[in-house]
Image (cartoon, rainbow, N blue to C red; front, side, top):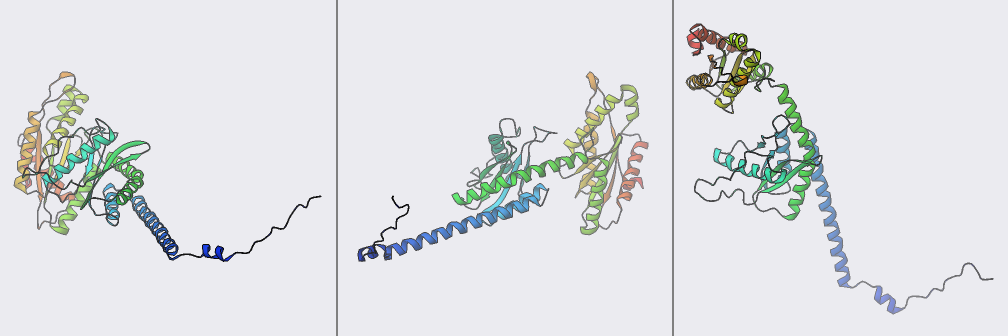
Length: 374
C-alpha cells in the first residue's frame, strides 16, 4: 500500500543560490524607482478623487446656475491654469429654439460678442443642428487680427439622461496637459447632472414669476424687484426710474372685437415693450391692461426719451385675430427715484400712477412725468 503523504526532500541553498538571490545595486535602484512611481500614482489618484469630491460637493450645494459655474471655475483653477469658464445651453421646453449662455459680465461688448459666437457654434456642433439658431461667424478683433483669447479654448459637451443639452468652454492661460484635460472632463461629467437640475429649477422659477399671457414678469415679481431697487437706492444711492402705463380704451377693444382680440393686443404691447426696453430693464404686466417698467440707472431725461419711443412704437403697431387690424395706444406716467430721495415702493408707484392718470385726463396717448403731476 502506497503512503498517502510523503515528506518532500529539502535541498539546502548553495552559495550560487545565495549569490543569485542577493539584490544588486541596480536591482535596488529599480525597486526604489518602482516604489516611488507607485506612490506617485497613488498620490495622483488621491488628488483626483479629492478634486472630484470637492467639485461634486459644491455642485450639489446649489441650484443657482451662475453659482455652480463659479464654483466649478474655482475648483478647476486649483488643478489647471483655467482663468475663465463659459457655458451655453439649448433652449428649454418653453422656448426650445432660443439657447442661453453664461459669459463674464466684466467683458466689453466686443469680447462678449466673440465669446457668444464661439459658444453658439460649439452648441450647434455638440447638440445637433437647430439647437442654436443664433449661430454665426465669429467676429474679428477691431485691429482685424485674431482675437487670441480662444487659442487654447477647450469645449466640453454636457449630457444628462443620455441627452446633450449644452457645452462648457474653458479659457486657460496656456495649453492644458492631457492630465489636466482628463480632470476637466471628469469635472464636466460630474456637474452635468446638478447643472441640468439647476437649469430646470431656474425654468420653474421663471414660470412662477411670469405672466402666462404676455410672457412679461408678473405683479408679484414686479413688487419684489421694485422693493429690491428701492433698498439698493437707499443703501448705495443708485438712481432708477419707473414707468407705469396702460392701454387706452381697452374696454372698448374687448367690447368691439372680443376678448380674444383683447388678448392679442396685450401680447402685441408686451412684444413692443420687449423690443424697446434694454436688457437691464425690468418689464412686467402690472394687472389687466396696465404695465410697468423699471429703468435701472436711468435719469429722468433718458426715461422720457425711452417712454416716448415706447409710446410711438405701440401706436405704429397693429394686431388682431383672423386678419382684423387693431391699433392701440398707451398713456405713460413716469416717476424717478433719485439720489437724496427716501421713497417707499408704494409711494413711487403712487407718483407714477398719478402721472399716468394725468396723461389719460389730458387726452391719452401721451407721456407725463411725476413732476408735472404733483
